Image 1 (spheres, rainbow over the protein chains, first blue to last red):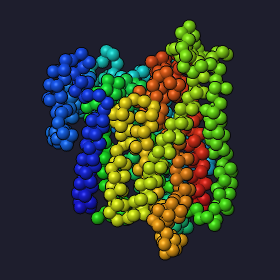
Image 2 (tube, one colour):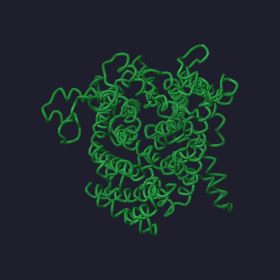
Image 3 (cartoon, rainbow over the protein chains, first blue to last red):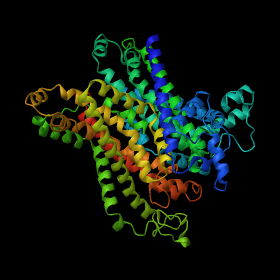
Image 4 (cartoon, chains in turn blue, orange):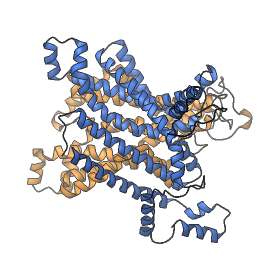
Length: 335
Length: 303
């Protein structure tokens, strides 16, 4: 097991190295002179040259790559043209909002997707099953950026019960920063009204972000439970006279959950990417919104920084999933 | 997109071994099973309808999709403008109808690029084996380690925002799935007797790959493409929505939703109708793909 984890960590390093090559190539593929973009349209040539020198945008490509990678190793992701600050600082500022939103959406995905999938399978062919099946096919087909807009019209304009966007009301002041997640920080500050405010601001974006994942997980869990219920050992258990509920609980659930776990890991990637769309709709100040602004301003250092950080998070999450896999299923061993 | 690939990734797709001898019988079985599934038939009808709309767009659409008519700005849906008009006074129904062309075109381009390249890589890896296989598969793993949509955004941003570039970017993150699928199939087929026989009778590598192995990969590839069409449409629309794909005033659905975003509270129709079009198109292809997969899946068939 320890050897397996060590090998996976090594592979993760290789992947991150590969990512650095990809993001570096992407930022050099950019049409136009990056130093010119950095300096702005009205800068004189000397200013452009000075910037090119300062940010190592001249010289052989391999040397530039070397500078880029050694920068990465020190946590230097370059300078954002938009905010005029180091990209790493920007990411540190905006990442907690994204993590808060993603984690909430992930929680919704698990808490809704898994039970609905199980219940659907247990009542296979019934009304609930048909309905949940149709809803989940619809769910994976929904453009979430559009769903977000529809929910805004419904819950903000017509019902008037939820805010349209942002993390807090206009008059609220952000809690002192501890984790960066307002839900937690407001509780730590003992401010319940602020907690309430951040919670109601989180509802719509989190539901929107989770919609597709809930659908995927429901379908996966349903299929997986059905497959397990057809297994020989379940038939044996049933023949022994076990009742259906305890059969489900004792024999089916754990085995059915294992394939779903892989899907859950992959969903994290989907949720991370979904942030770009949802944060833009709900004006949620995370790295997705930051990236959208960067795209609009041709801010390549920022775009590549976001790509890199999101990819690293994703790789790490999938490593955790693979390790959980081994812990949950004694039949799987890695060497 | 990862939602798609995770749910229906090639690793979970059927074995799909279509031997020439039993193929007609097999094809009939599949089509019978597909027809017995009413929900998939609805999907098929919607999908075919979308093709029809895309082809006949100039005939169906009552107005011009791009030219401006400022005095008709932001009109609500009415008998003359069924879906209302946008901020440039353009008829949204017309633009939604023309949008079908862009979505289908994008799906076709993305999937043919991804499937062609991925198939080539998978065939070479599976057939050559050894170091070549190892190297190609590690490269594939590398691409799969990225969250697909995020990498597509990065590539798309680097290439510059346009519909063509976004299609290329999506294809770049999509091919590894096909490479894996085809490699697995190649490894299976390579061990069959008819391949040995061909080799013994002196067939060249290229001949064996193209005449014996590739024909046995078609079924899983076609099924996978069917499953992917909906997600390809959704992904292209998503990139357009964040400003990386088709640019306004192109009547592309994702771009139209993005333009309407700023008007959503008062002129709800601007975003609502193109968004609904994306939803229905993706759903149609997903229903077809879902039905096809179920028709082919031996596990579900037993029950």
